[in-house]
Length: 74
Figure 1 (cartoon, rainbow, N blue to C red):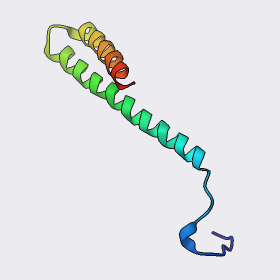
Figure 2: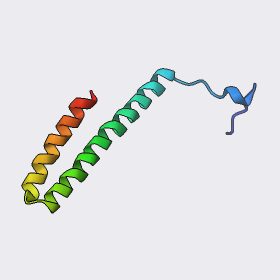
Figure 3: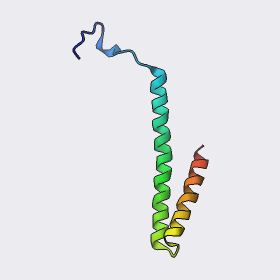
Figure 4: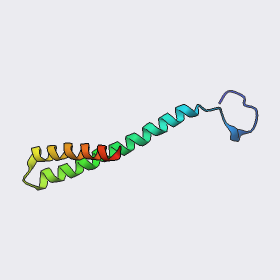
């Protein structure tokens, strides 16, 4: 803010659009795959706590759901 800018304020500073696109794509991928992992975790926890599967059944279900979700999102 200490610099003196000339020209209209609306134009702003120059941007590196390639880097901006890479960051945006990484954010979207993280949100997409993170949502799949969290949904699989919630389903696996419910199956582990409320069925006879227990911890091992919930863990197996979590791994299967995570792999299936990631495969379907590609």
